[in-house]
Amino acid sequence: MGQKINPTGLRVGIIRDWEAKWYAEKEFAAYLGEDLKIRKYIEKRLADASVSTVEIERAANRVNISIHTAKPGMVIGKGGSEVENLRKELNNLTGKRVHINIIEIKKPDLDAKLVGENIARQLEGRVAFRRAMRGAMQRTMRSGAKGIKTQVAGRLNGADMSRVEAYSDGTVPLHTLRADIDYAWVEAHTTYGSLGVKTWIYRGEVLPDKPNANKNNEQGGK
Image 1 (spheres, rainbow, N blue to C red):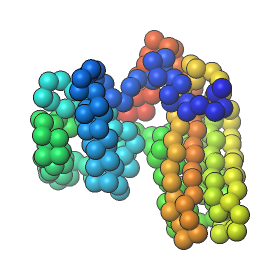
Image 2 (image 1 turned 180 degrees about the horizontal axis):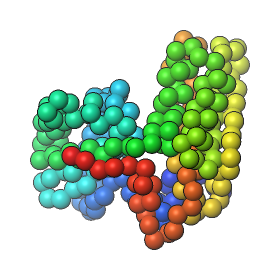
Image 3 (image 1 turned 90 degrees about the vertical axis):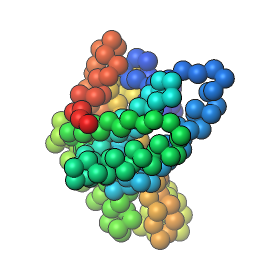
Image 4 (image 1 turned 180 degrees about the vertical axis):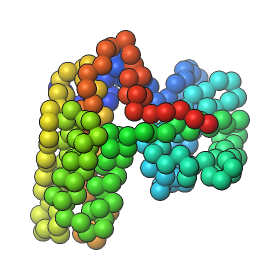
């Protein structure tokens, strides 16, 4: 089962927390649609800011958004100008009062999405896929990971037939629910078509009573 299910979803409520922290009954569909709009807008607006996760909390007519990024300076801007502009744009998008909290990712090489995006950008720049994957894996292991697995699927190196290539280093115990495994899927758009990049990073075991253990990789800030 651990091989087929998204490792993040399998661990929510055990060692990981929800990325959407609100509850609603009648307004559930509207809030969910609004969350999707917020996430897509931030992903497009901060495409070059190495954003990994966006957490959304709601209280009455207020929306609290926590943006986890490896480049907080780019998101905040000089004197906080960029984050203030983003807040105003999200105010207009949602029609609610928006508060933004910027959280720095101290070790981006231990974040599956950022590692996957790095591989994807190299593939788009026509770097050989094996070189991109192995380079990313070496950096991740040097940063303190217990294990990493990467997989690329599609028309690799422009081949006529699509195929899947996977490499791993260390251990990635997908069946162990106390194992802190970060997972992400990223798409690379090349001249030969789209390639799918999957990344699993094992950062060690955590106790089930510490749902925010994955935040040890991050540092808060406003």
